[in-house]
Length: 114
Image (cartoon, rainbow, N blue to C red):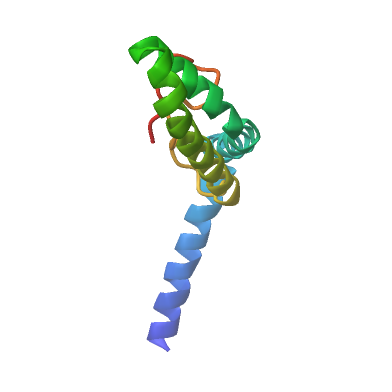
């Protein structure tokens, strides 16, 4: 009987703590930001291809941009779309951004990192 009472007390405490965490504005805004970030990255993931062609061309020349930039762009397009989909699926677990820059239009001449 004492074990059940202790377990009930622990579960009640955890329930109270978790409801306060969910009700806090930090949790809700973090989850919402992650959801929006994920949806935008899924929708704009294909724009990594032209972005990487431009970034590679500016850094190392046009020939390099149209050869290696295309390969890099395809890889980053797939990665940004996949990470965006993962953010949409796991938006209830608000974590920091997985992609830098967060959106494709931020720091256009910066290569994407994960």
